[in-house]
Length: 372
Image (cartoon, rainbow, N blue to C red; front, side):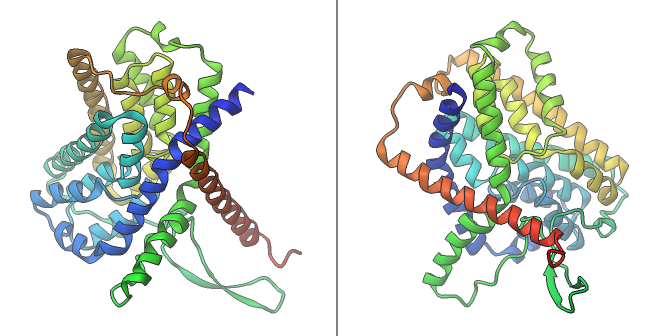
C-alpha cells in the first residue's frame, strides 16, 4: 500500500505542472514558424551553433523526435556542429519539463537545467565544428528507425481491401498548417496537440518514470545513497545508468526527485536529468549513420563531460550558498493537496490513460491483419 500511496502523491504533484506545460507546448507548436527555425540554423557559421542551442532549449522534443528534426537541419545546410548542438540541447529540457521542474524541484533546478542545456549545446557544437572541420553533415544516410517520417503506403492483407497507412511512433514532427486558421481554431489546435499528439508521445515514458520513482521511494531507506560518499563516483554511476536509457526530460524528474530524497547529491541527480533524456542506445545507432564515427564520439564525450561538470558546479553552488529550495519526496508528501490539484490529477490521469489505450490499440491494429 505504501507503494501506491507514494505513486499517487507523485502523480498529483506532477499533474498540475504537466497540464500547464502541455498548454505551453501546444502554443509553441501552433505559433512558432518551423521555417523560421530552419532559416536561422541552416548554415555553417558558429552563430548557427548558438542559435541551434537557443532554439532547442524550449522545444518539447524527446530524443526520438529530435532526430528527424536534426536531419532536416542538416539537409537545410546546417553544419555538423549545429546539428550536434541541437541534438544536445533539445532533449534535455522543454517548456513542459521546465515548468514541471520548477514546480517540483524549485527555481534553481529549473533555471540551471535550461542554462546547462544551452551551454552544453554550444560546447558540443563548437567542438564538433573544430574537430570535424572538413566534414559535411550527411543526414541523408539516415534511415527511418521508428520515428515517423510520414511515409504513406498501401497495405494489403489478403482480404481484398487496401488500407492507406501512415507509419508513426507518436513523435509528431510535421507541423500542421495553421497560417490561415482563425484564432479560435488555433486555440483548439493548441489543446489538441498538447493534450493529444504530444501527450500520446510522452505518456508511456511519463508513467514509467512515476512507477520507477515510486518503487525507489518505497524500497530504499531514507538517505541510502549517503553511504556512497564520493560525489564523482555517484555522478559516474548516474551517467552509466542514464546514458543507455530512453526516458524523456519530464519523466526523469520524479526519478531524480526520489534519488535526492534517498540521499544522493543534487548534482548527481542532475547528471541523471542531463544524460537520461539526451542519449539512448537506439539514437546512438542512428546518429552513427547520420553523423559518422568521429562526430558521434565527440557528441557522447561532450554529453559525459558536460553532465559531470554541471553536476559538480550545482553541488558547489548549493553547498556554498546553503540553498534549501529543492523539495524532496518526503517534504512533498508531508502536506495535504488542495482539492483542485486532486481534481486536475484525476482529469490528467484520464487523458494519460486515453493516450496509453490509443497507443496500444493502434499497435494491436497495425500488427493484426483483418484479425485472421
